[in-house]
Every structure is written in structure tokens, then in C-alpha cells.
Length: 323
Image 1: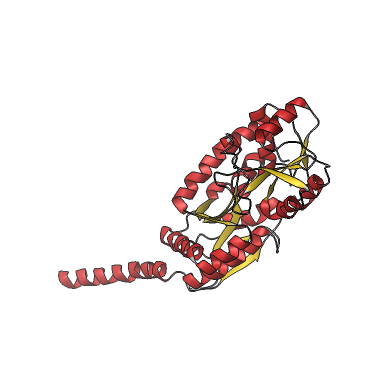
Image 2: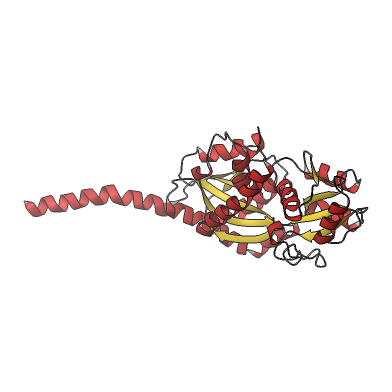
């Protein structure tokens, strides 16, 4: 009788435990949505669609991009943070949202601890630029010129609290100068102002600034990275020029809701890594100005903590707060 009870108990345990194990192994069993917290047609949306298509192939289920713009990307980010942690909803965003927005926005409806990184996917270099009428060729000359002509230079960026804005404030601190910040609503407005000499300095991506560099309307003083950009191989990096504190690329990172099961996060991480190794996908992204920059979830978390520490001091020093 005791043997029969033991066998029955074992059978019962297997019946309870095994299905949950199968469920993990079977993920995914249905369509997955990749939330883009920006409008259709922007750089985040375009890269998301390329990543989603190939990740869906590797996962065996379609990954559909769903745009949820609004509130400076907080709407879509908050949606994912509050979603069921089952791997069927994840987020694509940039370090601006993951690092800067929490630093400058006191009352966000979510915390970044509500999200777990799948991995870092892409990076986009930022350039330090001046209008053609500013007689400088590098960072040191710009700092010297700003000291010789105090309160005459202004810098246009895509808005308050953006990474370019923080770079301008960092440049002011490093060089002990005072370049006035002029916020615009977009990179396009900022580059137009720079080309027209309405502002004399800016920090922009190569994608938006390249046509104006080629027409000699503006000049690139530095790539704000540790590596030169292959499109502008003659332009030295900020690191090469002796200004490591001015390194500032933007990074595309994918997140799931916190408490998503580790095996599910791992599957998504593996799908992302395989996608970024795919030659056709790499070619598409690189032609659009992205740099393939994969980092696994664990290392991405450490990277975000480093970035947060780095930029929090700039935010405090410049007293940048979004109300």
C-alpha cells in the first residue's frame, strides 16, 4: 500500500511540475509585440522593424512593432514596465530614456528597476560641430575661442535634457567656458540653425549632419566616441584629442518587464545576438548609420549603471530638471 501511495504522489508531482517546465521550453507560442515609444518613421521605429523581423524568424513567432509615442517616450516605456512579465511584450529605446529621463524627470510613473535589459543592440555616434564661420578645427581651439570671445557662442540641440544638451554642459565644465544652450524641438531644426549660423555650436548625429558637412556649411570637430567613424575617417575622436569626458554616443537597448523568467530573457537575448550577427541585417542597419554594438543583458545592466553615474553629475552641476 505504501508503494502505491509513493507512486501516486510521484505521478502527481510530475503532473504539477512538468507542464510549467514545458511552458518555459515552448516559449514563445504566440505573437510578440515590440513596443516603440516613438512615432512611426523615426530612427527608433526604423531600427525596431529591422530587428523585429529577424528576431521573429529566430524565435519562431512574429514580432510586431507597436508604436506608443507620447510624454517624451514615457508612455510606451511605462506601458512595458506595467506589462505582464511573460516575454510577449518588450521595449526598444535609447540611453536617453533609460538613463537621462529618470535623472531629469522627478515624477515618472515608473522606475527603471521595473525593467530588465535584454541587451544593447546598436549605437549612433554623436559629433561636435560648429558653423563654417567659427575659425576652429578641434576641441581645444573651440575652448580657446570661447574664452577669447566670452558669451558670444550658443549651442543648438534637439531639446532640454537630451544627450547633446548634457554634452554642451559637460564641454562648458571641462573647458571652464560659457556656451549658451538653445533648445530646439528636433535635430533637423538644430542642424538648420547651425548651418544658418543662428547658433555656432551643436552636437548631432552623423545621419542628420552629413549633408551639411559635405556642403561645407558646418564643420565636424570631433567624433564623441572611442572610435573614428568610417564615414568621416579624417575626424579625430574626443578621446584622441584628450577629452575622454566628452565621449557620448547614444545606445539602443531592449528591455522586458522586471520579473520576466530568466529562460525567457535568455531566449530573447540569444535572438537579438543572432539577429545582429546576420549579414543582411547588419548591412541594412549600417547603411542607415547605426553601429552594431551588441552587449548581453548582464553587461548592459552594468553599462547603464555606469552611464547613470556619469551623467548624474552633469545633470546636478547644470541643474537640469524637466517639469
